[in-house]
Image (tube, rainbow, N blue to C red; front, side):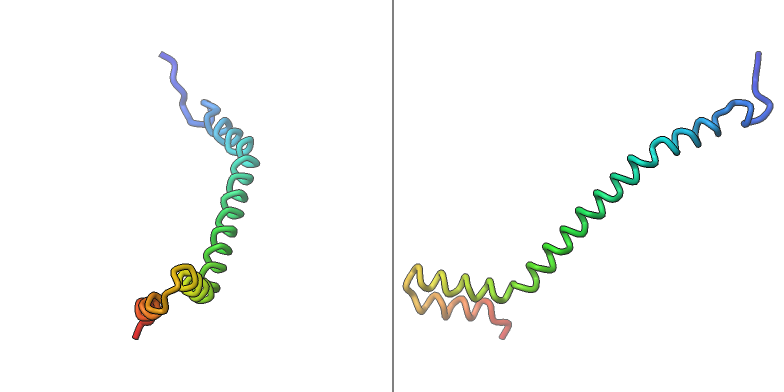
Length: 83
């Protein structure tokens, strides 16, 4: 029965290092793509939060105009107002 006296004789550490090096560019690309997607998500969320009051007012006016109801506007004011 043959066996290795030390790990270096198996050449497994060299193989592991080689595999790590050849996959590095692809792992780097995927990491950059993930960060880019995260940046886009954060930008989208930030934009949404910055304009939420303007959109609410716009929707309130549009609904009131569409349905021709001042009652609807008052109801929406009560719902959206924290007081």
